[in-house]
Amino acid sequence: QVQLVESGGGLVQAGGSLRLSCAASGVTFSSYRMGWFRQAPGKEREFVATISRGSSLTSYLDLVKGRFTISRDNAKNTVYLQMNSLKPEDTAVYYCAAARYSDYAYWGQGTQVTVSS
Image (tube, rainbow, N blue to C red; front, side, top):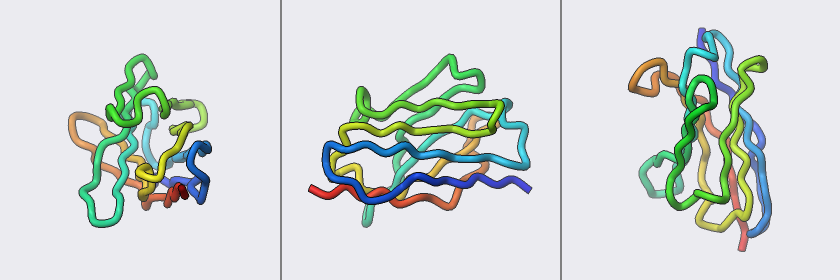
């Protein structure tokens, strides 16, 4: 049974930082491209960042470039999202997801990030 469990969300003031973690089980973690997505109230879910299986390739939503960093530790079956210089518009539920091929087949339950102004 595949499980992705996010943690690290919370309430932070604008300009602050948070690090999200996503622990995977039930999959060969190193075989999956991992991604972070977010969904704000009343909005569609959007892509935030992705990282390749061996960490050689990363990609980001333009709005978070230079502020967010995605990384992974295949030995710990965990992917991270370091979020710096947070803005109120970053407030959302953040989800991690795993893709073996082109589509993200597995999703976590999400963790709430709230940035106060």
